[in-house]
Image (cartoon, rainbow, N blue to C red; front, side, top):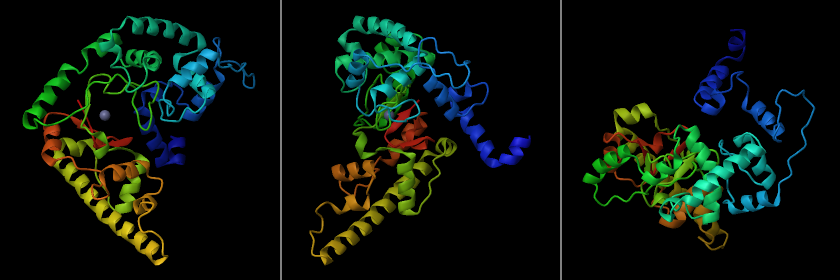
Length: 347
Ligand SMILES: [Zn+2]
């Protein structure tokens, strides 16, 4: 009680946030994420003993040649489950051993996963990951196998073999009845991603419960920081709550549609201003492209502008399509709390 009174609302918010995240909810002592990270950093060798007294540092694990090869095989922008970048082989093995439990536990998991992978037909292993090499997919499967099992899917190979779940096939069928031309991404056994794979997770695309409307980059996946930029840029707010989506998908669609219109208008005004300034200074008006200076640092928005032009904005999904996904019982990625995924629908 005393703590709650002293810390006020912030404590309440933190508790609520924590309880929604399984990894942290499992922590019986209510330790902070920073504490856990510190413990994980210390618990590197096989016989890691988290009860050892403080200050007694275990010998650091030195990455082997195999570790270096393994790290090199994976895409460069890999992240941990929380979305924090893994930039070096040292960070990679440290995270790997904390995820699998220890260096030895990883070796055991690797042996099992590799044996399963090596027995897969091409039609199965090719569904793992995206554009990586077969060798990279093999490494990815070590991570995925554990993530599947931890998610309650005890037989990852048969999940990958079957692809989309029956539920998804049925609901997608309902949508496609009305939208015959709809193009959606198929099944992909991969970790969740947001500008890079989050190792130690499995995507809803990998459990067979999600589709992406393609091409994805017309209606991008934003992180919360990027979404905040759009709201600030347009001086707007949008209620993207799951509750609102369930009640009336058209309302959520309309707000995002209007937000996009406001963004396009504002972007044009700002781009014109940059061009006018450049002209005044006797410089080329649109070289480099003026939108790049207006959207400085906004990688996703810049990419979309580059591909589809500034009048496209970031959203062009048809109202009927979005509403029909809602009616068929899909959750829209636009209603997620930790990112805004405009092209993603899941059951
Ligand atoms: Zn998706």
